[in-house]
Length: 239
Image 1: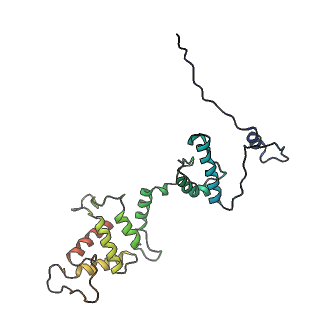
Image 2: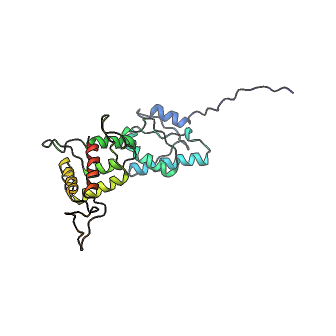
Image 3: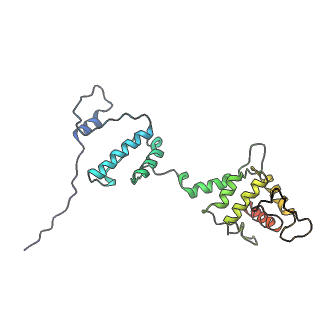
């Protein structure tokens, strides 16, 4: 019994006549009216979020009820930009894979965002002051960021690496809160310098401060040698 090979051709289904007519005469007057049947559904939505939710719910129904694949359907808009955040949020909620033809904004990549924020901390505070802003929140976030390797050398000729760890980030945050650091290089230098100049309580030498009975010294705020070590890491970070 012979076997005959046959080419498998995908079945191409053309658009409904109502859609073809709509495409040809949408912005033309006078337009000839035709019956739309089930080819077109109109929806009145109060805002973009509701509009996107209704459209994606309809697409989800086509995938589930009609057995279509995700790449068989599309969501179209004259300008997709204003709808972008609502599409991404609702699609994630509905479990719909989304590929935007225009792509995603580079700033939405967390690694790129972290790099831009890191560069921004060194911008001047304002037009009158030349020192870098170094706001507390952004500096601490940079120290905690998983996208930076702080074990690297600050410069090729440096004798030791920057050496920042996640524990250092928490310690620096505590120092900033203790020293009321809002931002600016001078505030950081003053706060770290004051702590580094104090006697190391672990050594128990002369000048070591006794803990206040009413308010103990904050546990995460270093003094003496520990503060000097943190100060060195901050200086290498700035470098």
